[in-house]
Image (cartoon, rainbow, N blue to C red; front, side, top):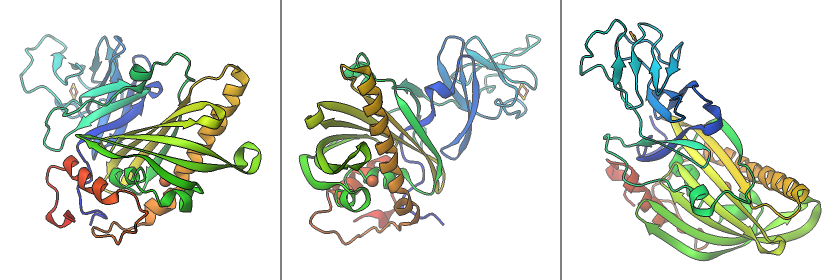
Length: 329
Ligand code: FES
Ligand SMILES: [Fe+2]
């Protein structure tokens, strides 16, 4: 039985891999959204994702399949499939039956990640995952750092709920003076909220001191969240990404990314960005024992300083085509 009163695979954009994991003309097998998926990068540089088993006689395209141009060639009988899953060649020149096609995922490769669109009913994307590289530029920002946690007992709705769960920041992460700067805004498939918090500087060699940070949180569906962090005292700016992809009914893979606006001194930039990313990874890991062991209460008893958890949960329902009746609050 599922731990959660909502489906395991919400509608939205979910990371299948990081860009650097899928090299030129590479083939990669991943398990996500309850499916076995084969990714390949065509010689044209474009990433593609197909259902793993060849529609001909079922060979696994990720086992011996190879890239040819913008297509993948199955190792079993050599048929080739393009990124839309259409067979484009049968060796020997036999006519291609119209049914010789395999399910393909709509992908967006942005900000160093390969995101796939998932809709339980197979509908096309209802929103686009915004690229912060495109919006903010990459000039003057450090290369992305990434950390992957391959297996966690959780659900994307639960991990994203952290974004609005203000009372957990002091208890789990040791932040203080949590204040909402911009109230929650639900804009279609995007949730925005901003808060300021104080963080201890023990891990940067300044024990007992705190610094105020402002967190602008943007949740683009349940698989793709971005937080823009500014620390006015140090005139620094960071951006973190949390990509949560359900693998099966009760397991997710989590990927965390970070970049920092470069400072005039490159050594300083290298040092601070490393410390910041370490702190971010540590923050994420502090949530694990909570996520992996908590129960989901449909009618939690809330306190005044909890943050907009009710509004968040209501908003989440839009990502399930068939919300179960008992999920209503
Ligand atoms: S099983 Fe793939 S070409 Fe035959
Ligand atoms: Fe957290």
